[in-house]
Length: 161
Image (cartoon, rainbow, N blue to C red):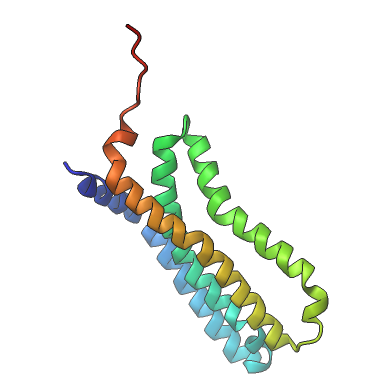
């Protein structure tokens, strides 16, 4: 088997395990968005709508990035829990910390805008930070695994003569 087939098999296994729950979350999220729009009208929904769409987009983007990072860390880490935590910290926690810190520092500046504008700025900030984390991981993880899978999977031993 070549590396591309091995990675494809891993993605198929991940899809079988997590595809259904991710799809269910997207359906529920979309239903809640449209239900909220119907019951609360655009006055309430308008200022949060970018966040909801952002959440749906990054559920998919983070899942892809976690898949690639998980495969990479799974080959590089000494234990399974270290691989899981490394991928989660890199993808999920780092974005939340960066966005949270930036928004906390910019609260005074945000007070000059109305709620719709603030929500759009926060959604754009979250998107920029999220993409700046997810895209390099997607590109690096894919290229690194496709190029070096066999070398990464076989432990290197120091042979003494």
